[in-house]
Length: 335
Image (cartoon, rainbow, N blue to C red; front, side, top):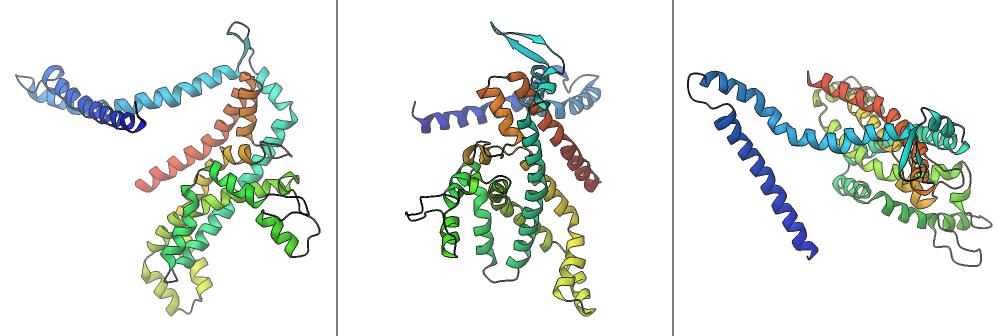
């Protein structure tokens, strides 16, 4: 079947299935299970209204259970077992975790992830806040915002390919197509550098890609927050003689601190799961390994499902507190 017709058929079946489920489930609930007739009509209506929300939530809960809860439980099980020939397995307890923690590559990945956590959320949020503030003060601010937000439309792999060309290195006798090397030689450098092979600093070159992508996200959210600040507070600060820097740091930033924290933690979750950029640009070589890439190497290259699953559980444990904290704050703001 042609892909276009296949897509249209999928949409048709999916939409029809959803409409059919909600229509017939309501019909079954009101006509068969709890009929709104007879001496118990009032009690049946109340019961139907109690059951109805769960009826609507069932597809989402089933999908979450199948695609989220089950993989977590299965990954935990795999992290505590060892694969044997003939598709068999045996329980080994924490042996996979001990093996993982005895490997230098794991600690390298963990150290790099911590470095990414310190740099990327902070820089993305700062650049996004600056872009949001400055773009609101110029006539062509919407155009500037569109350009800054554009990297968000590019996949991580696509962004990695673009930046790999920026860091590209050619022999000294050839023209440099890599922007960074071209600038380096133009300003007095003696020979081109292979930037992605320089230990420690190459991690920052990789971080630049994610900062470039996430700055647009931070800018959009923080720009909306800045526009929501009451004008009265800013006018009062101007009357009191506050300069633009004081207005920004002492009036605006405190009022949008909640939004800044949400943006920071959201980008933090993205950083903890970063894989595509490292995989496409260095594949974890030259001391750039991160936890997600380490997990991929163990599970799909070394075929060591136990250690790979153990590293996946470590990533989940690092992400979970941030998710819980975000949910707690969201509920707190809704009260």
